[in-house]
Amino acid sequence: MLSDQASLDSLVKARLKRWPQRPPGLTQQPGRNSWLRGRPPVDTKIHPFLKLPGSNHMRTLPDGLWLNFGGEPEDPFVDIFAIEACCSNQNLLDKRSRFAPSTHSLQAVCPVAWLHAPVMEDDPTPRWRGAGIFRYQPNQSVTLPVREMRVLYGLTQRDYDGFVRTQLPHAHEFFLPIETLMAENSDRNPALRALVKRASLSANFLRC
Image (cartoon, rainbow, N blue to C red):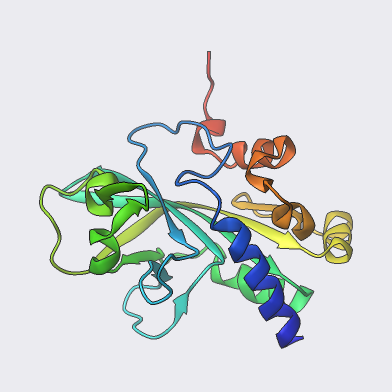
């Protein structure tokens, strides 16, 4: 099972590396929109991660992680869009527990080397400038509270069919067959883009 999960994770991450800096299909959200892709990482040693306040060891490393930086320099925050690939129901239960509603806020940790690195290979703009909330170049890692999150889970077809029949997602959860996630040019799939669009905070507001 571990080898199956490792193989599935590698396939999903290879596909997600082709996705853009903003989750495909996600519409403009209220306020500032400064999306940056944090995972899968270009450098496997330098990437953002999620954690609970006060925890230095238990880290959550989603297969895909996008951060939307917002607020003001004095009161910054991030909204996150995460993707998790699950090869079994047990794996799904473990990953869902990390994003379960809680009285504690998740925190997103952005290593200073990641913030200093270019947004993309063909865009030399450092990420800290692309984030749009920093007045000055940070000289240490930055930890930001997560204001809102949306999580997309990719399940095997069998598990997906069973979940649809018997389970009820939380408001922040979205599900799809993992084959759809791993397909060629999945970021251009109209059905997948429509699903991600519904994960936008703007979906909660009337648009005239």
